[in-house]
Length: 114
Length: 110
Image (cartoon, rainbow over the protein chains, first blue to last red):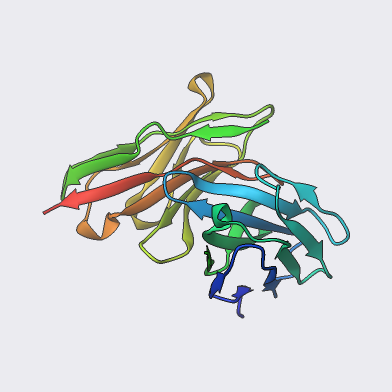
């Protein structure tokens, strides 16, 4: 049981390049999330998908797009990377645990934009 | 919109001392509340959660938290801190739209 798998773990981009972060979960969860983590800022929600076929903006969606490809997969795309997008990105999904929504996180993807 | 405030950016305690990490939230309905811990270079691990019922909840690693609706708080406590508790702690609130505080970094002195 792999849980939440993100790829790549590390990536270096130049300003203006594009890339896609991939996320897959094998727990049959309906909701999936993308967060970014920056020092002193905690985790900030970029986008989430409450169910297959739906996506919603979080706190910091500008500069990102997402695709909920199917129930398992939720990708995050940077169309034109900027240095301000240097961060650690976490994918997560929600499943029921004792009646409450509990997030399960991936291991994170460290992105550096030069 | 919901939000979470963790007033303490960094706390240092001596090993064996008690610990309390503060969390205040803003949420329109009855919240689901969580505490997560993150060790350096690691992902986030759930410590405990509150969704209803008893306002004092027990978690893993000897942690507990108390939900106080009147104060919009969900503070995390541990009676005796161990060196291995040094990490960053995040409070979170929400249901489908989960929001996190900025985190409190805990340092444990020998």
